[in-house]
Length: 113
Image (cartoon, rainbow, N blue to C red; front, top):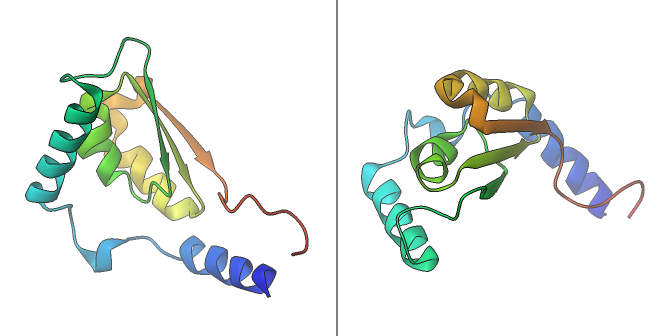
């Protein structure tokens, strides 16, 4: 059932040390498009002072670094894979004072299904 799928998913992503099929970075066109969309939705270049973005399934932090940190004051990354979260910490170390990291599943399920 759902519990087995959840456990397999967590096991899979916990064993990963990369995402995006091994690509070294997010395409610049994707980042530019995401920045444009986000800024249009917010009605300005940056979010209001004190703003926080939540990056669920943050992987190695590519979207946080390429988009979210350019718009929000703080970013909270949540990832189920310890190696990916560590990769995000390393990649985004220059902005560490603006970041929080949490190792967790975002399934919202507990125990049995």
